[in-house]
Amino acid sequence: MAAPDNVISYFPRDADFATLSEIIEAARAGLPSDVRDFLDGGAGREVTLRRNQQAFERWAYRPRIMTGIGAPDLTTSFLGVSLGLPILTAPFGADGLFHPEGHCAVARANAAEGAASIVPEAGTHAVEAVAAAAPVAARIAQIHPMGRPSNFATMLRRIEDAGYGAVCVTVDCPTVGWREGVRQNRFDPDPAVLTGNYPAGGSVALDEVFGQLFTRTEPVWTWAELGERMAATRLPWMAKGILTAEAACAAVDAGASAVLVSNHGGRQLDGAPAALEQLPEVAAAIAGRAQIALDSGIRSGSDAVTALALGADVVVIGRLAAYGLAAAGEAGVRRIHQLLRDEMHTVLTLLGAGSVRDLGPDYLQKVQP
Image (cartoon, rainbow, N blue to C red; front, top):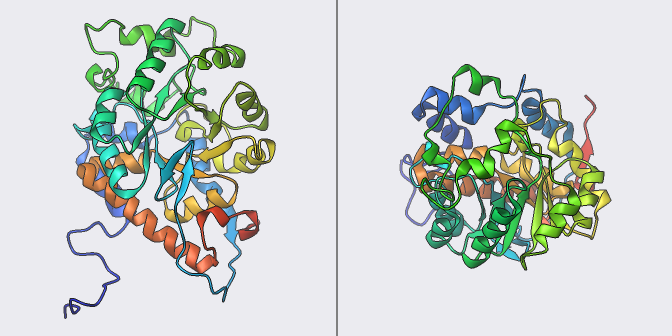
């Protein structure tokens, strides 16, 4: 029997995705096999890919009961960006493989649900186009420390001119990780899914920027070089790909206002530790000096709460956002956020935490393996 109109139903309507796993299954079912493998897979034997998710199982909650606290507050801010929930979407490239509107659709979904976008440099749509699609959410733009410094400077100016509020510098990708599945499939996507910022016939060719990923002929930039080149922008910046206290301190010393604890979702250096395992080390090293984000392994609202309790100010979702995009475009990404929000509300209520900003390590205990 249907519930009366004035009664809130706990369960979603038949047309809704009821769980994140339903969205993932729908996305995987609708993608070509080589694109599905590209999205699912990691580097090498995928040891780090597995570690990322297993790391969350090593923590148990310590709930506070009968607290008298009201409904939990999920609002926060990061790099000056106000957020309705503590979630950013990752700058996953080749977004047109998953939906023609790519990050334009992701940004619109983020704007509707209170999240924000990190917009990719190697994406299907230019940073200007994504900003125009959803200026409220397209607040952080990605850039890679490689190629000619003059082009790097030009890209920074484009990011400023497009109205972004911050920059994400991906520092853990001087070359492409060894990805067995991609190689076995002879995966060779249309370059158009990567050239939104560097279109064919433009003033800068894609190979001029990202050729180093494959040829590996040029020296990797130093922190000093990166800091000097980032000094050219008035925008705050975040170093993405941090896994150690040493790297976190070096990033902050170079001028970073935030770090993103990440192993690239297990897609770069196989054998690296899980990002979550490294989060306490990084948080202790730069406490009070910079904000902290975490990606790699977030698959649920509970995962997000665990990361926030261990020291992250926000979490960043990559595969989840891409699955939502592949499953149902903008609506699919919105549903990802809605399910994450609902689960986070539930977990915080059961934990007795009034706000995501109140979370800390005292809400957790390590589980013996």
